[in-house]
Image (spheres, rainbow, N blue to C red):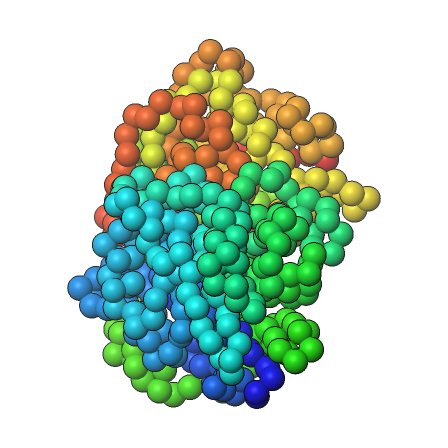
Length: 506
């Protein structure tokens, strides 16, 4: 259309290509194959197609690739080339498999990466901005990623990377574009989202710089469109004269922003990927998919304990024995006194025969483990933080709403083995741990312990800054999924007495 420029944007696809779940192969309304058909329906000669990052990690197919076929180009990389993106930016999870994997992905792509606030070996990873002219209209585009990545990522994965503040970079870039280019429209691509509700202005959580979209819309003059991501929600609207759109997660939706150049109206919306899957996209990586499916059905061992997750809420309120099992593995492989784990959202757990399919669907992140030496004061602070996950209303104990909106953060809640403790949810935050015992004795502030947690937690991820006070004892470099698989293979059968050491009261 002559008087309309269209921006199409994907985000947080996390390597999902096929329209099915990997834990049971049931059909789903997501995947790049469906998105390709949707994109083809909406794309014309006046369209710019963008991806906003988090593509390399997430799906079992991508996990299989990095576990078994690292020398090949990743499936999602091949698919993105076939989808003919114009530009991409990066997300925090694109660093999860390390520098070599990320650079190979970028080198194999046919389109430029616009992430300019990431410095690699002293130089910006991507260009400061790009210029496109469509029907005589000048469009400027730039990309930034949340600068909080060093808080979560393994240091070895980002050894040669530095991260500049996303907001400050975006502001300076818009000012530079206005001064040098004088474009008709400026499009920002930001792998981050809103720190405040864009409708009310009310802060979601503690503002720590992870999400800065509200500040960008409010304080950056001349930013016409902001493509957001990271929090996995579907969003669209206009805030402080900036149109914004965010396309959810796992290739389930497409952001569409129409700019009407004759009226200067900008219309953002989100389109569901409910179209038929593109056969060519699926055929492109079918060989790897077939190998992955065979690998996922590989039996690892047997199980005599109830390790299935049937209710996400109950699994945390009454401590699923899946958490106990993961803590058993972590303590045995690390030798630590204590172990802390979270259960990931939608984790199915393990049946009587355990397969890789169940394992990679249950433990979805490429974490490694860190052993820390902490004292009783840090331990109590850690437990008080995880107790913030709970709240109360007239019905009883509920999940604190701040871990539901704007993004479900079920992984915030940790369950710790090696101790016994009580949580009184109706007490004030910071005073909810009413009993804390180690080997039958009340824990005092000066007691010392070793504790094993994921590298994400040890780095202070999800507000657990107190763990950064601990002394590093050991960095267990192996991937957690590999360690769990090895434990199951070596032990053949999972069988232990249930441990009910966490007691939660209203």
